[in-house]
Length: 158
Image (cartoon, one colour):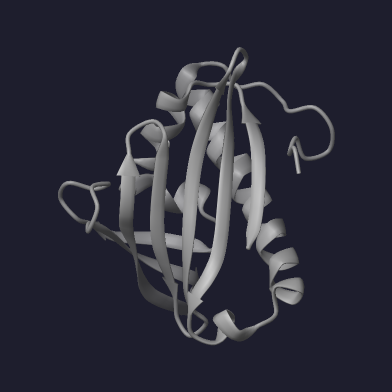
């Protein structure tokens, strides 16, 4: 399982406002190219974002479905990435005086990616998820009017 953390200079509510906007998914998820539709009621459990991954002319239509949702605290989604299979991704927030820490955990649950040893798969997930969290933080901080450059090269905690 890959686990990444990022300090966000915005509240958990600001972070979850971005996470709960299905139409904005492609703005912060690395690999998502476009949103085709978002189920009514998203991000309630059982609702989905219908999106495409890749880039033209090699776009693949796929879907991400909410499994668990606790507003401003936790979101668990099942992401399908054909032909690799599916993964489970969990986002949680921990309030801090300067904003919050967002933790992202991801692990494969179906398909070929599920049989690849963690030691081979996790570095790829970690790299991709660092960029995903950087984008999520930028959007949450911009929403809060607090966007600042993160210290260091990538601003991540892990």
